[in-house]
Image (cartoon, rainbow, N blue to C red; front, side, top):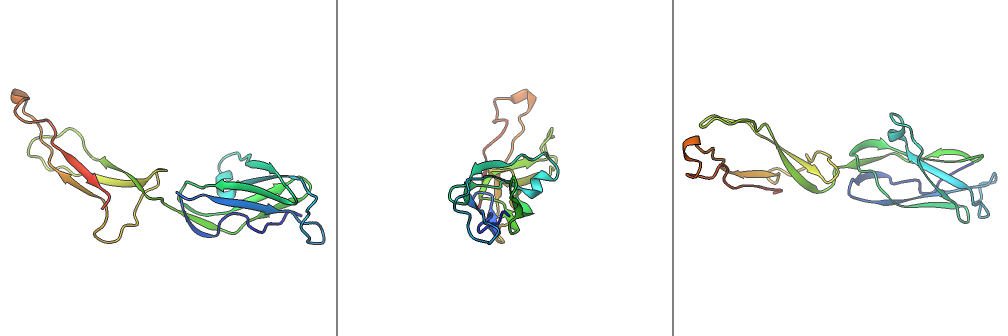
Length: 171
C-alpha cells in the first residue's frame, strides 16, 4: 500500500510559498520499500473535483518519491494532496489551507464617464500576485489612494491636465 510520511504541507500556507511533497512507499510489513522504483502520481484533491486531473508523476528512489517546490496559488481550502501508484493503492495527506500572498497590486473599479462636480464611488481592490483578494490588513495599514482627478473642459484642453497624479500605496 502507498503510505506517506510528508504528503504536502499542514496548517496554513501562503500562496507565495513552495513546499516539498514526499511520498514514502511501504511494503506489506510497513517497512520502507527501499527497493521500490514505482511511478508515483500526486494531485491536489480540490482541483480535481471540477476538472480532469492527471497530476504530476515521478519515479521513487529507494522507496521515496520526491516532488520538490510544489505550490498551490489559489487561496482557500481545505486542500489535500492525493498520491497513487499503480498496484500500490492511494493515500491522502493532511488538510492544509492557502492564504493570500503578499500585496502585489491595487485596482480601481467604478470609474466610468465622469461629469465635472459629480460625486463618484470608487472601489479599490487589493490582490496578491496570483489574483487572490487581500483582506488581511491591520487597522489603519491597508491600501490607500490619494490624489485628485481633473476633467478638462472641451473648450480648454490645454488649461489643466485631463488627470492629475493619483498614487496608491500598500500602507
